[in-house]
Length: 154
Length: 291
Image 1: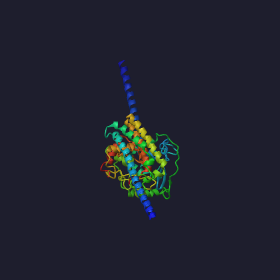
Image 2: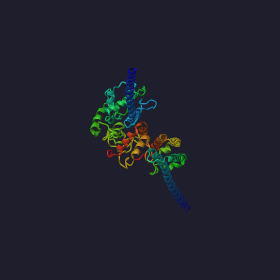
Image 3: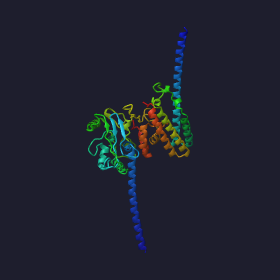
Image 4: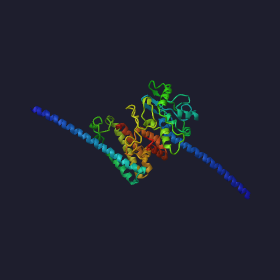
């Protein structure tokens, strides 16, 4: 009897911990999607000024700085744990290459971070042409990273 | 005395006329060269014929396809490995008809069927620009294609099939301010070469279709999105300034970025176009003509 209780308890705890693990994975996926979206929003705000859709140019610097802060604080280990692959969940677009080619992924993120530093410098200068150039250069690194590590839209 | 002064003034005016004439001719020439430069980039000549930025137009760029690898030729004026011996007529024939000076057909990886709609004057401006860039000695190896695609003579048959299947995509012979956007999209930048679905033997039935292309192989990364006017599937929800900005910077309205392939096309192509032309492209893409 004690044996049965022991096995049942063990199996139950395994199921509970697994579902907790799965739920945690989905929360992290949502969390990192929000981080990526927030970066996209900052870029949209900067771009709206460069396109002349709005003329609130004083917003460019704080939004560039926010991007730099967000990117600097990204901890790949915590944001991309092994149980949050696309093959494990349909809710993420992160390809398995994130985990297979971790070093390259880290390098790509570092390149984007460096380009964001350039963007902040350009924003400090207040020269919109310079800002557009830096934003384009940042975009190139982000696009290259998405190509290698993000599932394409159908 | 008065007579001498008048004669001196007349001579001064004469010189002034001559100087102005020379200035006008040189300005006209440099404007034409500027047009040649812009079109060399916007038409993809630089992007496809440059493998090393230190050797612009020197060829050797590799295009991976399901048929094998195409290696682009050297199009600098070098007389042994480039196009230095080509005449203007031969250049126009190559660009518009896909036939080399030695009468061989080019593979359709070279988008001559789009360029066939280009104005001869624009093609000659490109030719003049290519003749003005440094000559580079760079002998290019043959394409590395699978059998039977490596049989170049078979391209004659492909051309007949393609001509019979493809919808007539002839543009108005005169390019005006009204149709310039359409001209750049369909003739110069050959957007549908990537953004149009392909059928067997990579034939594109309709050059006007910009509904996107799925990847031909998962490792090739050669898919391209729908850029029709459709608000959900395409870019119909973008504004004209969104399209202009995207073609200059690669940044989409939602803050996302173009993929690596399109980034290269923007950097080495569309970003060279003047803003007025980008505005005309945007107007066309958002017009009812782009279904």
